[in-house]
Length: 414
Image 1 (cartoon, rainbow, N blue to C red):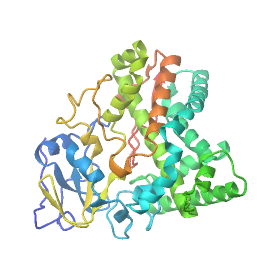
Image 2: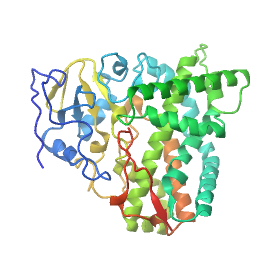
Image 3: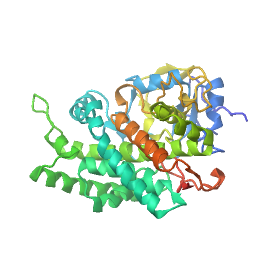
Image 4: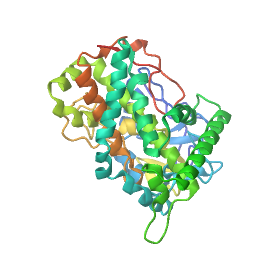
């Protein structure tokens, strides 16, 4: 397979190119693997032009060293994505107050206010409760009997339950939260009008929830964020609280569900890996890191940046205003960084994967996500040692048009 180059030269940027045969998402013959185009681009054109679903042009960056640079270099802006005419993959509100779409100093201020709720020490205190939630979900799955859908019974309800409990969302309202956030994370599966309706519904609900907790504080994350302030009296505005609620849903629910589903498919379609974990549970923490590295769940939609000045990168001249898409999935398979990157090595000793990002936008809830994956695997190994796929992987029906890649259902038996 060869990759045709787009007609972009030093004098013409993606924004000015007349046409580009490559489009994002890149073709994926096997939904369980990255697009083979990534490997070709790493070898021959590490910073290459393509066309986004919106018709905008962008640069896709495929090598580890260049992806890492884009994620950390302040010349590649997240805030610039909020401009009305900016290229984008996901709907982004003008003037968004989300950590996802901020640059310093605004990002620095907001992250400082919320970071204390996500320290490793605070996250570890949640472990017993997350283990309890996991156990309840697996009890329900066992009672329902085989075959069972691992997405419906575990991978979807575990992250959304954890996030809703952190925010103090009542159990009865969790399904509404799930539906709103599913629509909001659409790349092409829903219309722009549907996405905005979902955003308005979620904003209205979160606004009422914030007002209720201002009147009657509770022992939950949302109350702690409402009360959080610096020594100079700085605190989060209601708009920032709303945006952070969105951030938690995207990163804490969708990303974790996608990564958990990807990890389980990888383990179950290669039964020798499942047997390896059954024989040695001490491998689980390292296995989680390897499964995160190997994952193709994240499509890269949330990693896009806009260049704020001309930059030379990987032999390409990126101009001010150009969209840049760092392909984290590709970076995690870079042969220059990872030994035998196409193999799953559950005991891999060096694993500097970029699944949680890098630099100032490194995922704030990375430790929580790791914990949920660890506890989910441990629970399944304990309760269902004979776990296996109930259908061939080629029969899985994949959800299209969403920011995180996963099948509609994951039937298993035991």
